Length: 375
Figure 1 (cartoon, rainbow, N blue to C red):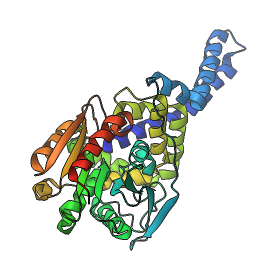
Figure 2 (figure 1 turned 60 degrees about the vertical axis):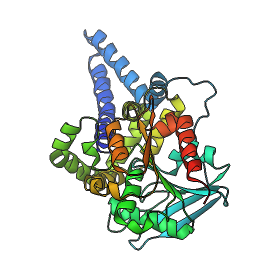
Figure 3 (figure 1 turned 30 degrees about the vertical axis):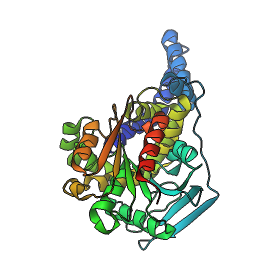
């Protein structure tokens, strides 16, 4: 998301500055500790040591300070699939697909958002694999999927990848579940390819997503819309060019906890555990900055507003009361314009409510799927 891209970039710049500030303080101590300014020198030394400790260990303090303890909470972690496929695409990219659960169960295809990968579905995998057939894809350039040779990260391209996954797996009447950019991908597929509408697709779950360029439905939307071309677009290209440096600084931000602050404020509502916050921040850090930037450029050209009324499949819209990256009114707009849509509001919840409010998310999704009936 554009606002997340901007916030992480600022955090990355700060993380690059911290070592230089620490070195400057050390030099001040070295210069003045044998003079009458010894007291000042000692403060500089303490400041340098404190900053160095923050650079190396800051995340352990920040993630605890910014989180809540939730007794008995199942904490997320990286998981691996016993069964997986790689789908080669005409543009030179390869799409990683992983399978979980019962092969004879109702198929659910999961499409994660930008700046994440399959692992973001930790709680959904654990909840649904007992009775359903789960098919999870990594978006191009994220997780174990590779980028296309032509650097195409448009929603049309990713929707074509999703269609290829559906065709490759051969599943009948799957439920499509998309989070954030994953929801945009599904909407693009339904809008651009009417033949995949019902009866080809049984139902759709759209979680924390939007129907148009996200700068129009985001926090500070007027400001973000105004600066899209002069600032955000330019910033995307800067990040693409300097991607190796930005990625190094992103890992520095992860270690010192600065990126945890960004993740907490923009994607959680404040009831997340320390491990949930760290898990989400880690997944974001694993995403190459150039991929995130190209994804944002692709979203700037996204709009299916006029096609919403033509979507003929049942749709569950999962919104969050405090979602700063896709404001709740975007979900309400889709509810009003998609003919067979219903909406659930998670309170309190933010953009990562599929982690923070996973119990409510999963129960709402299963209720919707069961109402669709057996294929």
